[in-house]
Image (cartoon, rainbow, N blue to C red; front, side, top):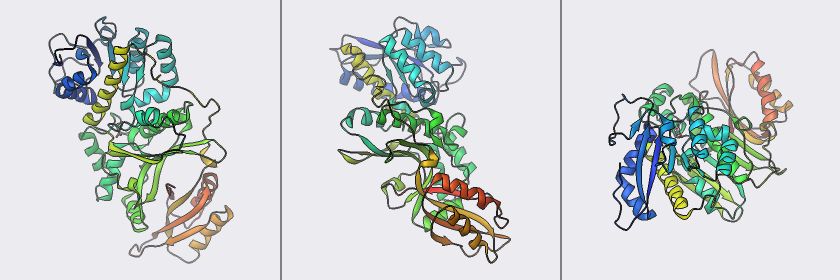
Length: 441
Ligand code: HSE
């Protein structure tokens, strides 16, 4: 597929695309729509030379010239005509082989693969360094929101003290729909139909996809590579419509929230969990498939970045942005103008979740009889956790009733201990639902 260029361009950059599923198909369509515009901005022609797909038989929404499509990704990566490889197959097995093989060939690579970066980032960066070819990954975090460029380039003169991010479009979509009354499973299905959810949606709803993304942002902001196992992660499967309702009445929204925060001791909290946030905060109004990231720099103050976080078009926009960067670097022979990752805080460390502090929402299902609240508050007091409010909503008559407690600042370690004891109380009938509360200060 040739992109019609202005007449003055002499050189063509040939793209080898690996993967033409939801995102790859979106990239081909976006290139068809705006490739000529991009070419005129970049001063080089763009051409999709080869496309590798898993099955040649599958019906596709895009058309390519004969001979472009192949089921053999190696023939694309090794094709001497291909200057730039775009990896969009996802997963961490073949995708890793593709990226490493392309880098070994000295070819720059664009990828949208956050799991691959989260698990193998250091290895891939070392391979890029060795080969002299660069690795571009804007599309790996927050879909169409150019947050990687913001952290690495626009805010290069800042120390990022806080980052709060709604980074999973699917979970945000599900929480929004649940808030409107839709069942959890129906919302997941809708997200899948619209191309937001991962092939395995548990990556979304268990928080892993978003955890990979916050790990990447934390690494870029703080200059040491944060491993996936270091990111404390909780998904949204334990949240009920009732929690969204109670939170709303208390003046909060519930969001799956990534946090990167410097502690007083200097270590960094890097976490991804659902949190109650004040409903008058701008992040509380980031709904549906949108992502929103608040980045606080010590020079600039608060900055906010917002846009669609998932879906073929949003992700394609970020892939095109990386293709643009890669093409300009090729044009100027600038293989390490901005390296894939530059370590700069060799002593950086992630703070254990138990040591971090926040407030809490606690929903218990308890027997409606005298003395229950006294028992719960005795456990909290023993763990030095203060209660800021208690609600037992009316209209829940039955064997057990909901009891909602808002708790003051306490270490996560203390809260975990308290929860273990509360769970054992005979008057507490089901597993307590604890959701952290973040003031976003
Ligand atoms: N499943 C991801 C999301 C897609 O919902 O955010 C983009 O990474």
